[in-house]
Length: 102
Image: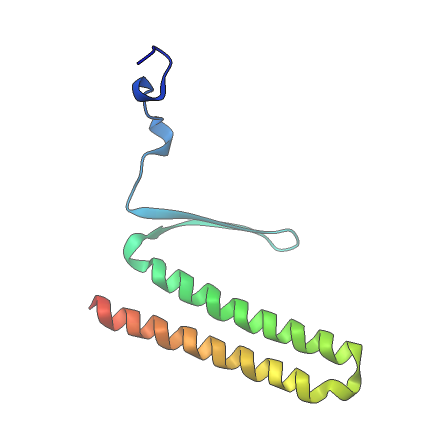
């Protein structure tokens, strides 16, 4: 190996792996939040973001559909129902993961 090769490079001390995940959320209008999530609790974070993301996406989709045409109320309602079903499936899967860990 040569002197500057990858094999002899020292690891960066600032990037050592840990049992926690660093989380940083930034929203331009609302500000930012930062925290550390222990590895055993990461599934709660994923479940929460999945449910919130589903609700936001379904609501925005329904509003946009109604803005396109008022006569598309059935499709907008179907979008909301689909978002609710997906959020419920994510919550049920998160609960099942909790029971598996115990």
